[in-house]
Image 1 (cartoon, rainbow, N blue to C red):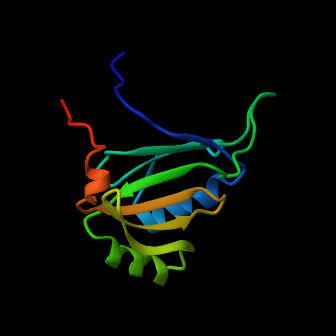
Image 2 (tube, rainbow, N blue to C red):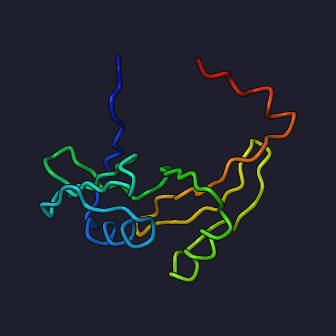
Length: 134
């Protein structure tokens, strides 16, 4: 299978709040919005995320539990400071991690984790677990 695109889709009754959060704080922009379904694209169009109101009998609301979006940035510390000044709630301030990143973790309006990180060299213990890209 050749996957051309990956777009996480979150079912929620807070589509407008999430649109505002990701557009204001992370530079996303709507590429589709009919009120029930909102697709947001990153500034460089490299990433999309969608939010949809529950439709049909099988649709369940996502409460954010166990779901995390990961955004790699050039430098985590200025982003952390900028986002904190904008009122973004963090559950972890920036810290160096042995697996090879410096990260901070925010939480969006429905509880989705937003893992913001910069790649740094991993410790020797973790470096041996990386698989070379083909």
